Amino acid sequence: MEAQALKKRAKLAMDRNKVKIAGFGSTLISTPELGFKEMKSSAYVREQLQDLDLEMQEGFAITGIRALLKGSSHHANICLLSELDAVMSPENPMASPDGAAHACGHSTQSTQLYAAAIALSEVQDDLEGDVTFLAVPAEEFLDLEYRLQLRQEGKISYLSGKQEMIKLDIFAGIDMVIMIHAQPNTPAYKVFVGGGSLGFTAKNIRFLGKEAHGASPFTGINALQAAHLAIAGINANRETFSEEERIRIHPILTKGGDVVNTVPSDVRMETYIRGSHRAAIERGCTVVDRCAEAGAAMMGGHVVIETIAGYLPLNQDPLLGEAFAQEAQQVLGEDCIVRGVDMVGSTDMGDLSHLMPCIQPTMGGFAGDAHAKDFKVCDPLRSYLLGGEILANLVIELLKDGCALAKTIRTSFVPLMDRDAYLRYLETEKENMHVGKGKAQ
Image (cartoon, rainbow, N blue to C red; front, side, top):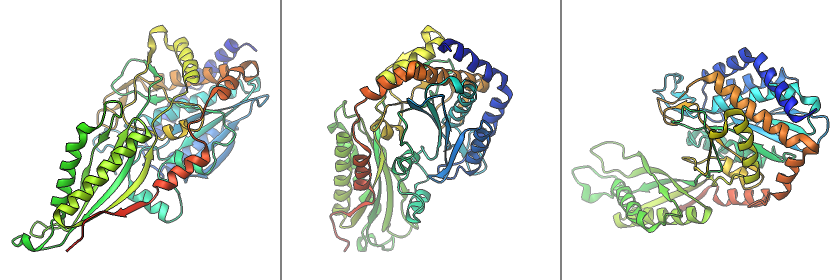
């Protein structure tokens, strides 16, 4: 059957199931859960995909789900991916009692995946390849104390969902990965393709000094002053980074002392070091370490620095991105495509994009800032159906004519690292802890 006829059948299937799709989205946005805690969301997504008679795999990376739709032949395997987790946004109207909210659009992308699954199930027997639907935990790099505890207990090895799933080889047999992300502050249905994102490394820094009564500070070593000096050093170094490196360092103090009348002896800092590529991030990390060590040394204390592997920069596949743009243009109109605008922030899709063809285009239909109290999807059902239609149509194009386009994308892709090299990279940064210069007196 011709691709256009398949697309029409797929769209009609979504139209017949509008109530189901709307209910799916309403349930997810009302059940926000943080990373590796998405128990209700995961169970609901699994239940709904099972109703489509897909082959299911579950329980990996704690809440991950993999569902397989088999075509009439198996020349390629296209993965449609969505993320399960929410963010902390206590003032968002859709926030749960503990402050979690889908203020980054993950519930919308999951519903777009579900809509595409309904559409593609309708034309399953006419597909010349397979489709994998992946619901992935823990994209947002937060709640780190909980994740580090999970790692200590042996329940995970790495702190994000895609990192963990790469380690578990969940992407084995998949040829390429596609996901639509929300574009904040963009109520119009524009689609942004071909942009990148910054990568980052995270650091937990602990400044250690010596307690003393606040009225006798000369008998102690003030760890808060050491942290202050470190932050001043970081700020002084900002002009040493080039525009091309795009370094962003944003520390916070999570503990500034214990009581006001005692010289602080244990002060905690967290920071990300973001950059446009790995070498830039590594240079930024060297600067942060140097400033932390210098601050401790100047006060006569010492510092413990823990480095945690964050995310690599996003490397979107140009051929796959252009194929997406063509399908989006057919659905949304000629003026909907915006090329080359980088994402704000970082994503673990960047890690996956170093290993295999990936795209993470962003789509409008959202008001407000990402992660903020005013973030919302403007017209939920329309967003679900438009995103689902674009995804389904792209899969049909990729798998037609013996999967010709999918094969071209697969063979032209040059990985930036293989899986083994990637896992070595994670292990190099995992639990990289050292004690800095300076001695506690």
